[in-house]
Amino acid sequence: MKKLLEFLVKGILGSDNFKIVEESENGQGHFIISVPKEMVGLIIGKEGKTIKTIRNLLRVKATLEKVGVSVSVQEES
Image (cartoon, rainbow, N blue to C red; front, side, top):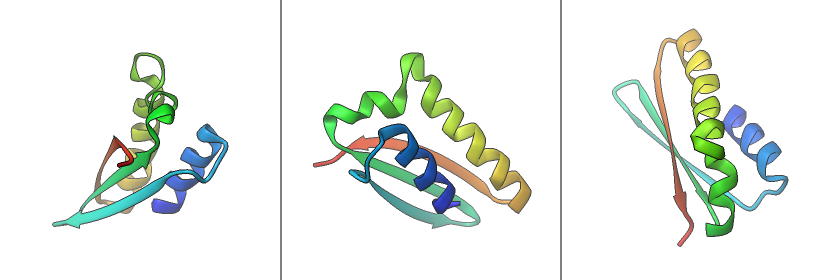
């Protein structure tokens, strides 16, 4: 699932300037996308449409694998 998320984010940003951290708890996966401040808007998109689409695509894959998943975005520090 992390590979799918990396593929999607790389396609949106057009660069490898991001990090994805995966945390797992009780069959629930949580992914945190860390990007530079100037690129956060690209991931979130207008009215949050881009991040919603990313979450929906991962949710479909998670449903097929019978696990839970969540995605959040944060600025790199």
